[in-house]
Image 1 (cartoon, one colour):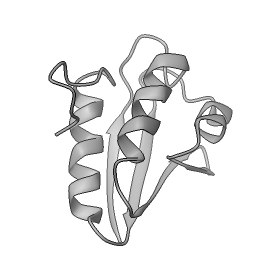
Image 2: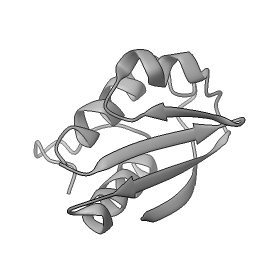
Image 3: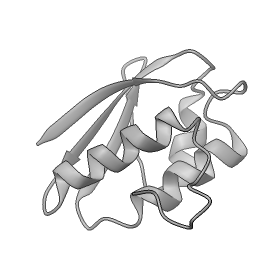
Image 4: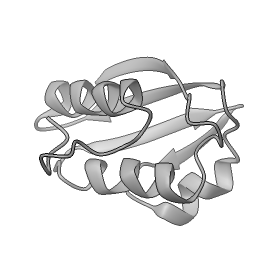
Amino acid sequence: MTSADIVVRTGVGLHARPAAALVAAAREFSCTLTVTYNGKVADAKSIIQILALGVEDDARVTLRADGDGEGAAIQAMVRLAQQGFRPDPTGGTE
């Protein structure tokens, strides 16, 4: 298992577009990915679960990956967070 703590800085938290960008990036990997916030855990590949977390702007969340490609998955999620959850204009998250 690989994990990383990130701070969500989007201006709106993990709502609508930022959440959709996170889910789209997570679905690129075969490993299990979760997001933990305020003691609640969500499947990073489920838009409903991510939105239900209610992650606010400037909140700290923990990303966890388990399985094939977990290191690459965490790196991609951290990079996406650093970009403010805006997908790479070249079409990839890596």
